[in-house]
Image (cartoon, rainbow, N blue to C red; front, side, top):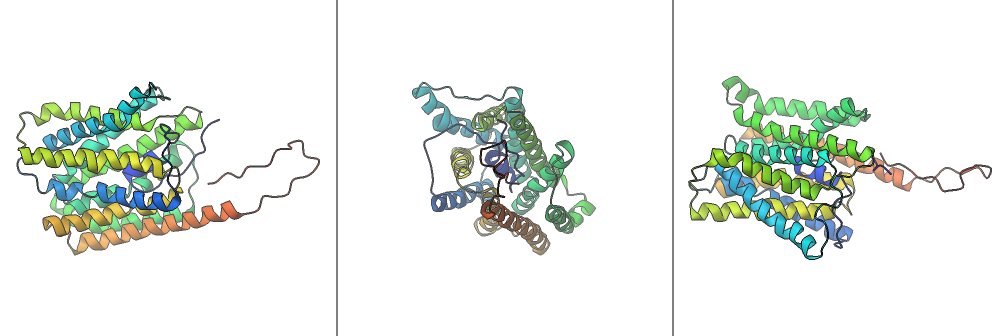
Length: 343
Protein backbone atom coordinates (compact mmCIF):
# COMPACT_ATOMS: atom_id res chain seq x y z
CA UNK A 1 0.00 0.00 0.00
CA UNK A 2 1.43 3.40 -0.86
CA UNK A 3 2.48 5.49 2.07
CA UNK A 4 0.22 8.37 3.08
CA UNK A 5 1.14 11.75 1.71
CA UNK A 6 2.30 14.25 4.30
CA UNK A 7 3.03 17.92 3.96
CA UNK A 8 6.60 18.94 4.71
CA UNK A 9 7.73 19.76 8.20
CA UNK A 10 10.14 22.50 9.00
CA UNK A 11 13.80 22.65 8.26
CA UNK A 12 15.76 21.18 5.43
CA UNK A 13 17.57 18.55 7.47
CA UNK A 14 14.44 17.42 9.19
CA UNK A 15 11.47 17.24 6.88
CA UNK A 16 13.08 14.89 4.36
CA UNK A 17 14.13 12.47 7.08
CA UNK A 18 10.87 12.67 8.96
CA UNK A 19 8.38 12.36 6.13
CA UNK A 20 9.84 9.62 4.01
CA UNK A 21 9.22 6.67 6.27
CA UNK A 22 9.57 3.74 6.28
CA UNK A 23 13.24 4.06 7.08
CA UNK A 24 15.61 1.33 8.17
CA UNK A 25 13.86 -0.46 11.01
CA UNK A 26 15.23 -0.39 14.52
CA UNK A 27 14.34 -1.64 17.96
CA UNK A 28 14.84 1.85 19.42
CA UNK A 29 11.54 3.36 20.54
CA UNK A 30 11.24 6.61 22.47
CA UNK A 31 8.39 7.73 24.66
CA UNK A 32 6.86 11.05 23.67
CA UNK A 33 8.77 12.94 26.37
CA UNK A 34 12.03 11.24 25.43
CA UNK A 35 11.45 12.05 21.76
CA UNK A 36 10.90 15.75 22.55
CA UNK A 37 14.11 15.89 24.60
CA UNK A 38 16.13 13.99 21.99
CA UNK A 39 14.74 16.13 19.17
CA UNK A 40 15.69 19.33 21.02
CA UNK A 41 19.15 17.91 21.71
CA UNK A 42 19.49 17.05 18.01
CA UNK A 43 18.74 20.62 16.98
CA UNK A 44 21.38 21.80 19.44
CA UNK A 45 23.91 19.43 17.84
CA UNK A 46 22.96 20.66 14.36
CA UNK A 47 23.37 24.27 15.48
CA UNK A 48 27.07 24.03 16.35
CA UNK A 49 28.18 24.09 12.69
CA UNK A 50 28.48 27.86 12.48
CA UNK A 51 30.39 28.50 15.68
CA UNK A 52 32.76 25.56 15.11
CA UNK A 53 33.48 26.73 11.56
CA UNK A 54 34.44 30.17 12.88
CA UNK A 55 37.17 28.61 15.06
CA UNK A 56 38.98 26.76 12.27
CA UNK A 57 42.58 27.84 11.76
CA UNK A 58 43.56 26.94 8.20
CA UNK A 59 40.84 24.83 6.56
CA UNK A 60 38.72 26.80 4.11
CA UNK A 61 35.66 26.37 1.90
CA UNK A 62 35.71 23.05 0.01
CA UNK A 63 38.27 21.50 2.34
CA UNK A 64 35.87 22.09 5.24
CA UNK A 65 33.10 20.39 3.28
CA UNK A 66 35.31 17.46 2.32
CA UNK A 67 36.45 16.64 5.84
CA UNK A 68 32.99 17.07 7.33
CA UNK A 69 31.50 14.73 4.71
CA UNK A 70 34.37 12.27 5.13
CA UNK A 71 33.88 12.03 8.88
CA UNK A 72 30.11 11.78 8.38
CA UNK A 73 30.64 8.75 6.14
CA UNK A 74 32.84 7.12 8.76
CA UNK A 75 30.30 7.79 11.51
CA UNK A 76 27.30 6.56 9.51
CA UNK A 77 29.13 3.36 8.58
CA UNK A 78 29.77 2.70 12.27
CA UNK A 79 26.25 3.71 13.37
CA UNK A 80 24.18 2.03 10.67
CA UNK A 81 25.97 -0.10 8.10
CA UNK A 82 28.34 -2.02 10.38
CA UNK A 83 25.65 -3.15 12.89
CA UNK A 84 23.53 -4.42 9.97
CA UNK A 85 26.48 -6.36 8.58
CA UNK A 86 27.18 -7.90 11.99
CA UNK A 87 23.54 -9.03 12.23
CA UNK A 88 23.85 -10.39 8.68
CA UNK A 89 21.10 -8.06 7.52
CA UNK A 90 21.14 -6.07 4.28
CA UNK A 91 22.25 -2.49 4.71
CA UNK A 92 19.55 -1.34 2.28
CA UNK A 93 16.35 -3.26 2.92
CA UNK A 94 14.30 -1.21 0.47
CA UNK A 95 16.66 0.50 -1.90
CA UNK A 96 14.16 2.68 -3.72
CA UNK A 97 15.89 2.15 -7.06
CA UNK A 98 16.95 5.31 -8.93
CA UNK A 99 15.13 7.46 -6.36
CA UNK A 100 17.68 6.40 -3.75
CA UNK A 101 20.49 7.84 -5.85
CA UNK A 102 18.53 11.00 -6.67
CA UNK A 103 17.92 11.43 -2.95
CA UNK A 104 21.63 10.83 -2.28
CA UNK A 105 22.56 13.47 -4.87
CA UNK A 106 20.21 15.95 -3.19
CA UNK A 107 21.75 15.23 0.20
CA UNK A 108 25.16 15.81 -1.37
CA UNK A 109 24.09 19.26 -2.60
CA UNK A 110 22.65 20.07 0.82
CA UNK A 111 25.81 19.03 2.67
CA UNK A 112 28.10 20.88 0.29
CA UNK A 113 26.11 24.09 -0.13
CA UNK A 114 25.52 24.44 3.61
CA UNK A 115 29.20 24.37 4.55
CA UNK A 116 30.33 26.49 1.60
CA UNK A 117 27.66 29.09 2.41
CA UNK A 118 28.92 29.29 6.00
CA UNK A 119 32.31 30.35 4.66
CA UNK A 120 30.76 33.06 2.47
CA UNK A 121 28.17 34.74 4.70
CA UNK A 122 26.98 34.93 8.29
CA UNK A 123 25.59 32.00 10.24
CA UNK A 124 22.30 33.86 10.73
CA UNK A 125 21.89 34.39 6.98
CA UNK A 126 22.46 30.71 6.21
CA UNK A 127 20.12 29.40 8.92
CA UNK A 128 17.26 31.76 8.13
CA UNK A 129 17.48 30.95 4.41
CA UNK A 130 17.44 27.22 5.24
CA UNK A 131 14.37 27.68 7.43
CA UNK A 132 12.21 28.57 4.41
CA UNK A 133 12.77 25.11 2.91
CA UNK A 134 9.34 23.79 3.88
CA UNK A 135 7.64 26.70 2.15
CA UNK A 136 9.56 26.09 -1.06
CA UNK A 137 8.73 22.38 -0.80
CA UNK A 138 5.05 23.07 -0.21
CA UNK A 139 4.85 25.23 -3.33
CA UNK A 140 6.83 22.66 -5.33
CA UNK A 141 4.47 19.89 -4.18
CA UNK A 142 1.50 22.02 -5.16
CA UNK A 143 2.63 22.34 -8.77
CA UNK A 144 4.31 18.95 -9.28
CA UNK A 145 2.03 16.65 -7.26
CA UNK A 146 -1.24 18.56 -7.11
CA UNK A 147 -1.19 18.81 -3.31
CA UNK A 148 -3.65 21.43 -2.09
CA UNK A 149 -2.26 23.89 0.42
CA UNK A 150 -4.32 25.52 3.18
CA UNK A 151 -4.72 29.27 3.15
CA UNK A 152 -2.51 29.59 6.24
CA UNK A 153 0.43 28.08 4.32
CA UNK A 154 0.05 30.60 1.50
CA UNK A 155 -0.11 33.36 4.12
CA UNK A 156 3.05 31.97 5.70
CA UNK A 157 4.79 32.03 2.31
CA UNK A 158 3.85 35.69 1.89
CA UNK A 159 4.91 36.78 5.39
CA UNK A 160 8.15 34.79 5.37
CA UNK A 161 8.93 36.14 1.90
CA UNK A 162 8.48 39.68 3.17
CA UNK A 163 10.85 38.93 6.05
CA UNK A 164 13.45 37.54 3.67
CA UNK A 165 13.20 40.60 1.42
CA UNK A 166 13.61 42.88 4.42
CA UNK A 167 16.71 40.97 5.53
CA UNK A 168 18.53 40.72 2.24
CA UNK A 169 17.54 43.83 0.26
CA UNK A 170 20.67 45.76 1.38
CA UNK A 171 22.92 42.79 0.51
CA UNK A 172 21.40 42.47 -2.96
CA UNK A 173 21.74 46.21 -3.53
CA UNK A 174 25.41 46.02 -2.53
CA UNK A 175 26.05 42.92 -4.64
CA UNK A 176 27.01 40.85 -1.58
CA UNK A 177 24.51 38.07 -2.10
CA UNK A 178 26.71 35.18 -3.24
CA UNK A 179 26.60 33.37 0.10
CA UNK A 180 22.85 33.74 0.29
CA UNK A 181 22.42 32.19 -3.17
CA UNK A 182 24.63 29.24 -2.19
CA UNK A 183 22.60 28.80 1.02
CA UNK A 184 19.42 28.83 -1.07
CA UNK A 185 20.65 25.64 -2.77
CA UNK A 186 19.97 23.79 0.52
CA UNK A 187 16.17 24.29 0.66
CA UNK A 188 15.90 23.85 -3.11
CA UNK A 189 17.71 20.48 -2.99
CA UNK A 190 15.70 19.49 0.09
CA UNK A 191 12.44 20.30 -1.69
CA UNK A 192 13.39 18.21 -4.72
CA UNK A 193 14.50 15.40 -2.42
CA UNK A 194 11.24 15.39 -0.48
CA UNK A 195 9.13 15.50 -3.65
CA UNK A 196 10.99 12.60 -5.27
CA UNK A 197 10.73 10.44 -2.15
CA UNK A 198 7.03 11.20 -1.69
CA UNK A 199 6.23 10.40 -5.32
CA UNK A 200 7.91 7.03 -4.87
CA UNK A 201 5.94 6.32 -1.72
CA UNK A 202 2.67 7.25 -3.39
CA UNK A 203 3.46 4.48 -5.89
CA UNK A 204 4.27 2.00 -3.13
CA UNK A 205 8.06 2.20 -3.43
CA UNK A 206 9.80 3.11 -0.18
CA UNK A 207 13.16 4.85 -0.11
CA UNK A 208 15.53 3.96 2.72
CA UNK A 209 16.82 7.37 3.69
CA UNK A 210 19.64 6.39 6.02
CA UNK A 211 21.60 4.88 3.10
CA UNK A 212 20.57 7.93 1.05
CA UNK A 213 22.22 10.20 3.61
CA UNK A 214 25.30 7.97 3.50
CA UNK A 215 25.38 8.16 -0.30
CA UNK A 216 25.04 11.92 -0.10
CA UNK A 217 28.00 12.20 2.24
CA UNK A 218 30.11 9.98 -0.04
CA UNK A 219 29.19 12.02 -3.13
CA UNK A 220 29.91 15.28 -1.30
CA UNK A 221 33.33 14.05 -0.21
CA UNK A 222 34.21 12.82 -3.70
CA UNK A 223 33.00 16.01 -5.38
CA UNK A 224 34.91 18.35 -3.07
CA UNK A 225 38.14 16.33 -2.80
CA UNK A 226 39.74 17.75 -5.98
CA UNK A 227 38.71 21.26 -4.95
CA UNK A 228 40.05 20.77 -1.43
CA UNK A 229 43.50 19.62 -2.54
CA UNK A 230 46.11 20.43 -1.34
CA UNK A 231 44.95 20.16 2.25
CA UNK A 232 45.72 22.97 4.64
CA UNK A 233 43.89 21.83 7.77
CA UNK A 234 45.86 21.68 10.99
CA UNK A 235 45.49 18.90 13.53
CA UNK A 236 43.15 21.11 15.56
CA UNK A 237 41.07 21.77 12.45
CA UNK A 238 40.71 18.05 11.83
CA UNK A 239 39.45 17.50 15.36
CA UNK A 240 36.86 20.24 14.92
CA UNK A 241 35.83 18.90 11.51
CA UNK A 242 35.50 15.41 12.97
CA UNK A 243 33.22 16.95 15.58
CA UNK A 244 31.09 18.38 12.79
CA UNK A 245 30.94 15.13 10.84
CA UNK A 246 30.08 12.93 13.81
CA UNK A 247 28.30 15.07 16.42
CA UNK A 248 26.85 17.85 14.27
CA UNK A 249 25.55 15.70 11.41
CA UNK A 250 25.68 11.90 11.65
CA UNK A 251 24.39 11.35 15.20
CA UNK A 252 21.48 13.83 15.09
CA UNK A 253 20.35 12.53 11.70
CA UNK A 254 20.07 9.02 13.12
CA UNK A 255 18.35 10.29 16.29
CA UNK A 256 15.77 12.33 14.37
CA UNK A 257 14.78 9.23 12.40
CA UNK A 258 13.73 7.62 15.69
CA UNK A 259 12.04 10.78 16.99
CA UNK A 260 9.95 10.97 13.82
CA UNK A 261 8.39 7.61 14.69
CA UNK A 262 6.86 9.12 17.83
CA UNK A 263 6.31 12.85 17.25
CA UNK A 264 3.71 14.35 14.93
CA UNK A 265 4.94 16.36 11.96
CA UNK A 266 4.10 19.81 13.41
CA UNK A 267 5.82 18.85 16.69
CA UNK A 268 8.99 17.95 14.82
CA UNK A 269 8.69 21.14 12.78
CA UNK A 270 8.38 23.40 15.82
CA UNK A 271 11.29 21.76 17.61
CA UNK A 272 13.40 21.95 14.45
CA UNK A 273 13.13 25.75 14.50
CA UNK A 274 15.30 25.65 17.60
CA UNK A 275 18.29 25.02 15.32
CA UNK A 276 18.00 28.55 13.94
CA UNK A 277 17.75 30.06 17.43
CA UNK A 278 20.58 27.95 18.86
CA UNK A 279 22.81 28.47 15.82
CA UNK A 280 22.54 32.26 15.79
CA UNK A 281 23.00 32.44 19.58
CA UNK A 282 26.06 30.17 19.58
CA UNK A 283 27.73 32.10 16.75
CA UNK A 284 26.96 35.37 18.53
CA UNK A 285 28.23 34.29 21.95
CA UNK A 286 30.92 31.81 20.88
CA UNK A 287 32.39 33.62 17.88
CA UNK A 288 31.35 37.24 18.33
CA UNK A 289 29.27 37.18 15.13
CA UNK A 290 26.60 39.85 15.62
CA UNK A 291 23.75 39.14 13.19
CA UNK A 292 22.69 42.80 13.15
CA UNK A 293 19.27 44.31 13.84
CA UNK A 294 17.96 43.88 10.30
CA UNK A 295 18.74 40.15 10.19
CA UNK A 296 17.32 39.66 13.68
CA UNK A 297 14.10 41.48 12.82
CA UNK A 298 13.63 39.65 9.52
CA UNK A 299 14.55 36.32 11.11
CA UNK A 300 11.99 36.82 13.87
CA UNK A 301 9.30 37.51 11.26
CA UNK A 302 10.22 34.37 9.30
CA UNK A 303 10.42 32.11 12.37
CA UNK A 304 7.20 33.50 13.85
CA UNK A 305 5.35 32.85 10.59
CA UNK A 306 6.70 29.30 10.38
CA UNK A 307 5.94 28.58 14.04
CA UNK A 308 2.37 29.88 13.78
CA UNK A 309 1.77 27.80 10.68
CA UNK A 310 2.96 24.66 12.45
CA UNK A 311 0.96 25.41 15.61
CA UNK A 312 -2.20 25.77 13.55
CA UNK A 313 -1.30 22.58 11.68
CA UNK A 314 -0.88 20.73 14.96
CA UNK A 315 -4.25 22.01 16.16
CA UNK A 316 -5.95 20.90 12.94
CA UNK A 317 -4.37 17.48 13.13
CA UNK A 318 -5.42 16.98 16.74
CA UNK A 319 -8.95 17.99 15.80
CA UNK A 320 -8.97 15.29 13.11
CA UNK A 321 -7.54 12.73 15.52
CA UNK A 322 -10.25 13.37 18.13
CA UNK A 323 -13.19 13.77 15.74
CA UNK A 324 -15.73 10.91 15.99
CA UNK A 325 -16.09 8.65 13.00
CA UNK A 326 -19.36 9.02 11.08
CA UNK A 327 -21.89 6.23 11.77
CA UNK A 328 -21.98 3.42 9.25
CA UNK A 329 -25.10 2.11 7.70
CA UNK A 330 -25.84 -1.49 8.74
CA UNK A 331 -26.60 -2.23 5.11
CA UNK A 332 -23.19 -1.07 3.92
CA UNK A 333 -21.25 -3.59 1.91
CA UNK A 334 -18.00 -2.62 3.61
CA UNK A 335 -18.12 -4.13 7.10
CA UNK A 336 -14.68 -2.88 8.02
CA UNK A 337 -14.26 0.29 10.13
CA UNK A 338 -13.58 3.39 8.12
CA UNK A 339 -10.15 4.89 8.36
CA UNK A 340 -9.57 8.60 8.76
CA UNK A 341 -6.89 10.13 6.59
CA UNK A 342 -4.84 12.77 8.33
CA UNK A 343 -3.98 15.74 6.14
